[in-house]
Amino acid sequence: MLGVDRRALMVAWTVFLFALGVALVYLMRQTLVVFALAVFLAHLISPAVDLLERFAPRFAPRKLRLSRIAALGIVYLLILAASAAVLIPIGSKIGEQAASLAARLPAAIQQDPLAHLPLPIWLEEMRPRLTEILRERMQELGQSVLPILSSAGQQILSGLGNLFSLILVPVLSFFIVKDSAVIRIAIVEAAPKVRRALAEEILDDLHLLLIQYIRALVSLSAASFVSHAAVLSLMGVPYSILLASLAAILELIPILGPLSAAVILLTVSAFAGYPHLLWIAVFLGAYRVFQDYVLNPYLMSSGVALHPLLVLFGVLAGEQVAGIPGMFFSVPVMAALRVILVRVRRARRA
Image (cartoon, rainbow, N blue to C red; front, side, top):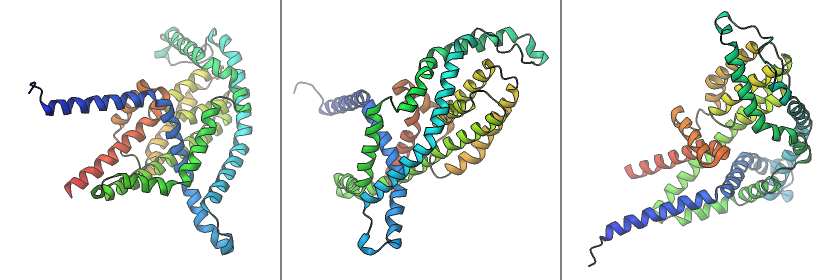
């Protein structure tokens, strides 16, 4: 009667609700990151809990049947003991090297990192420009990393930082693993009856995707730390444990992470006076070839199936939306959306 189309109102209302949902997600991004990390940790430890719960009764009397809470508690204690045994000695070494690098960084920036490094003839003319570029990169590194390095040792040894997230993530993961069956039933029953089979299929696919992706990430990060620490220590590179830990952490960010780790490693080694940068570059190139063409396809062969250009776009877009957490979660979010889209299309065709 007033000349307003009902369909146009419905479209406008839908767009408004969608925009409101996106705005709320953006405002709650820190809380969502904590819950997402809890989900990741839950998927990482859930296979161990299921395995212990399944095989423990075979080695114990029936009256002493292991409950899921008890199995979960045992897994948590084993993870805590293993983490303490590994992280305390490595963390103290990382803190010591970080404090040393932070103390030497201001003086190293004023020096010429290429003074004792022979360059090919075709690069000799560019030596001043390369020195200036390295000095600029080192200044940027010092401005962003120096405050972290100065207190890294104390933070690692004392366990400070974001204590709220550090405590909340394992607690949330505990409840997610303990009540996984109840959560699954609640999600399936929330869907219409005709869509419950589809909801179960999507949950199965997402569960398998997250388990495979998290296992692959942890394995790639561990392999990066072990290989870098071993090779750099054998080559006599300064701050080898610190650089290996940075490479392992940055391995969690696809594409840009390994590239940033290589740049940081070569830059720090150059300013520390290491004379064999070419051998470091050879090692980084060889390891990247092995990682990309052997280890990565083996670990993610049935997991994330995304084109590298789409992964790069997601990483860059995630960094603009939520910083480093956005870069980390961009790939699993896109992979999950792909899984849901594939299942919905199959259901419609059927």
